[in-house]
Image 1 (tube, rainbow, N blue to C red):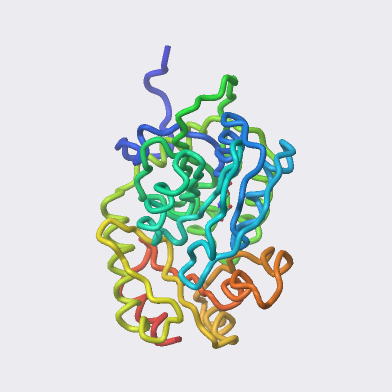
Image 2: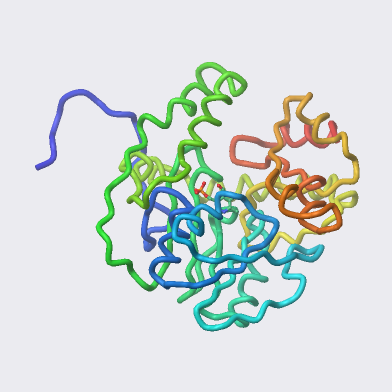
Length: 313
Ligand SMILES: Cc1ncc(COP(=O)(O)O)c(C=O)c1O
């Protein structure tokens, strides 16, 4: 029986989750673990240009993996041929590679795993295992969605996130700089957790988001940057009508630009420092890690902030 009355909880809108038909889990990497377990893959091909936490489920389950290279358009340098029991994982980079994901589906069918952690809004393709991570697009500390036709016969405990969310509040109340250390600590604490169902708190926050408004704001910001600095961007991006980007990926030869942006309090992450250990300077992933600046274009910002970024560049 649910309770009625008494003190209030955090005030949130009660709309709907965006990925209503998906399995709601605790993290993106655990969605991948779920897929590895349910499909029983023996080996998976991964891009060099990826995040090291993707290796966590492989190390945990003892599943073999091998890396592949990308070309200058962040597509497979050459097609990998798969045996039975093997799969290929592709990252829908920055939410801008959905057409390519569709073409890979034609090549690999069900043996494709789509990592949409950078493409929250990209619709899943029927029959293709696809996962998403909430914290890359929204102010939550965890949470992920998975589309997988093969359910796992496993009881999953429900996660609890309330103790993980202090940095989200601190960022508003104190400052991003002060809360940054807590963010780092909490991000590390997401390592090596069992697969769990999404917490009620993350689920409630995810049901309170204005998804259409966020999508529109991200697209407008992206277009503003692209119009102003697209001509000096080392990669030309095509923002298709249904794409909702995570960031504006700006490829530059200017090795000091990242620091100049940070000095101007424009925070750009590095995707992904581990890549510098995994490959040599001659590899495309090495260059992408060093020279690709993921410029913020998210729903917190508008024309004024985009102008600041443009002027700094
Ligand atoms: C490309 C990519 N895939 C998967 C993940 C894992 O997502 P999560 O942190 O929700 O486990 C990350 C980052 O953490 C990522 O950058």
